[in-house]
Image (cartoon, rainbow, N blue to C red):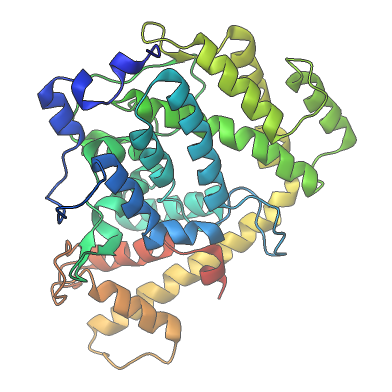
Length: 389
């Protein structure tokens, strides 16, 4: 038996009331008599078939890819890396691989276009116009709960309606804070209680594994992309080589960095000690994080990209808001802009006039807060390419 097996989110290892909470949904999914999937496998495939997941292939991870370099990581590739890392760790520790994969697959569905730059711009807009914070983990939960739709077996558009355990893993995956040990929280509270990124840990070991896998996955790949795009000087690469050769490898790339961290984590983690790395490897992770913040994410070459993203997203918001106000003043004629008509069609899915059974989050779209929220929701779901067009 693997060391975490008794701790994993498996029905036979948990009190019935805890298991029922973890697999609970806001409402029942349609059922098939011959379905071979468990609840977490169903979540995985529901995310896989969603439009929000498909759009990740055209969303920036770190480096804006206007030049079309096929070898630069996009958001969907990052998600695949996280799923790979998390599944390797979960299998080694004896955790629930289906739950781990579902959380990993859905963890970044709430990311804005243009990566973290787009997230910061939408945070500014949301604070200014709605008096609310915007952060991608919370937006991910909001999208899977209320925005993202999937056709059922009768072709009716329904909300994704994921299990509590997967939704919890999505909102709690923030790995920006440096932590020496990660353990799941004990309380299964309403996920609306999250008010900031990383405020609470996931309630399952599987969610905690995805959180640390997210960090392992992006550190190595961001370095590799920065080297490919020549963001780093020879001196900076030498600095990186010195700090990263903890196990005397000659290469500094995604493979080496990921492998070393995965092995070290599996060797040092236990139900009693929590998910943790050796002191030496934890220090290496902190050092590489600091390096990436200073020389990659803080690189002056990203400044024009920030300005470009801000121009596009602010202009889109202004145009959509003006369009909504124009509609409220009685102008219901079809717009000469295809983009505005696509927005109108999308909004209709979430208003009281829609015949679909999904949640009608915008009501009758007559209040200012409702249509501002619709504008920000629409922008946050865009790909970079669609926003540019």
